[in-house]
Image (tube, rainbow over all chains, first blue to last red; front, side, top):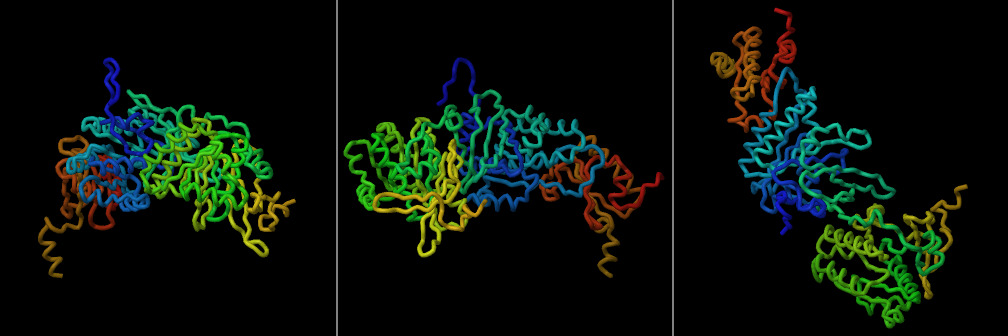
Length: 486
Length: 107
């Protein structure tokens, strides 16, 4: 399929089957060659390696996982939390886990080499016909070599062995930017044909993992640091285009349709930003979103409303009770409502349908109600991908995207509002919830973040009246402590 | 009593010291390890020992089972506790002390 220009032969690649990763690697790992993944502990290096083998196994490609640090049983257990049944793949001979933890009591006396390890790998790979291999936590193995020259010699002979046997290999090593020890394994970086660095950046609410390819011999590759998430189902790398997320300037302020809310947001929504309104059922997410839809309509701006919860008629009808009349905008043609049942078709078809609708209607703003329904497209992973690609699609076009997300009965509210793991891509995050008032249950609103704006960080009471929403200056409740401070 | 007498009468079966030496046939370090451990045992253990040699290339399953990833590797299986020594065993003092065979006194 790929274009072979002139007499330059394209490098053969082995797909990782990891969502988004093959895209930025322009096809996958260099086939029959070695890739180094380095990063600090807990960044997901092992998961990348394991997913490569697991998805390969599902596709019929046998592989070997060599664990220098973890027990085989804990590798299996961790995989299960991601929904991967490794044991099943081991049973059918598509995967072998070699537990290669050295006895910490081992005594060293004189010269030695890694021939035994290679003999074991040779035997095991022949047994199942494996062509893919992951050496996880190679740094642990390297500890037994006291001598850096020896360490290198052995790594080079392991590398030679891998090349001779045409194994597509991943080596993971612990190294981190913070301790300035990227480069500790410089000789491994030099030896490998491809080097991937994994970084974890702490964030206000959700820490973000990023992955960057720093070297790929013989191939082009995406050069950004790409955010990725690990969630049930596996890893998703977000292949933001060069002019995407990171470099996109936020547009001018557009009114949310409510003066007080504009002030709380620090001026309103930003044009071209992605906004997530999260909260449990009945807190007023759709009402807040439609307050904006109405205001945009009055300003003559075009809005595409993607409804996954109810029919267009029912939604328009429901909005009349808080005094939000969308009919005029529909008649003028500035508001277009597209509804679909999430179960109706797969993620891809939903995406194509959505992207087509956006490119045909060319809206200023898109509203999605609610992304929580995306999970019904198949899986959480499918939902995440849909949301993530929609965010990118709108970002690239400077379209404002407002999404509602229904959180259900989770005690960990951070998880509940995080919205399918996409919150790191979100510019503004608004959280609605119920709180116990004196005599009634009241609604509370909190702006968790509003990128590029000085937003209020206080809780605000808000009400849904028959003439729209009403928001207080700040919460009347003592529980938030906003007035007790100074 | 009877059992142990029988065991003692069969030197092949149950020597007080049982070791496994993992090697790669024809490799210099493996050859050195073989010689070094033989010398130490001859000197310290007389005939109270047995060394089983395993070639990792032809018997990788054993290596895997004993978690042997480098060659040469010497494992003291009995008496317990188990001891693992990697390398060509050139450091006699270290090997003797690791195997709990007394101090190397420059004999």
